Length: 114
Length: 110
Picture: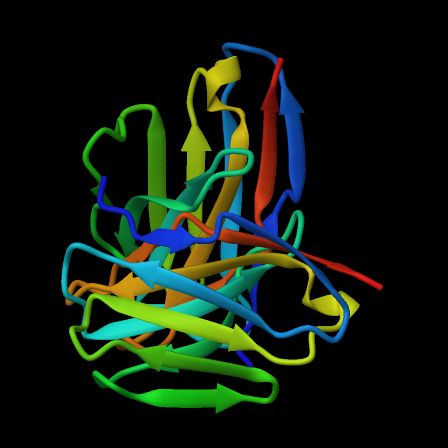
């Protein structure tokens, strides 16, 4: 099956710093990648939709200047959490798809902001 | 934002028992999906349903797409310890976005 990886799997950073999370489709070219956030014991909430070569589309309530998304190639999308604060601590999960086929999810990145 | 309601919120069962969980929505979806998430991992697709009334099986799992297109259920028969995890339903929008349910946490005791 299609494989999606994320890096890093976990990261701890100081408040005020920026953190970049990578999402890669390893064995297919993803026309669309999605970024989700999951707080403890809660569901996955879609943050943004990322299409290769174009600007990401953010869900209502998600600050685009705080969560910068870049989808520079058909196999890589990055999420940068800028000026991170403790309330940004969460589990960030990406998924990738092509031509509306099933979304394949990455293993997630746990972010802890001190 | 929009969310699907799942029940029960959590279940504690004994190995070998059957499990049933539901997902309801105020909106219509044309595709329903069921995922399982292990701790610290991303969700994995279990079953996809594409047609109202459809009943689909995958091993010990059976899922049905409600005729109103506003609900779905998932059954797990003869549960085993590795069934432990969180089960999410999801509705697929025409924009290819997924709306996830609130989740059902399953614990299986030997």
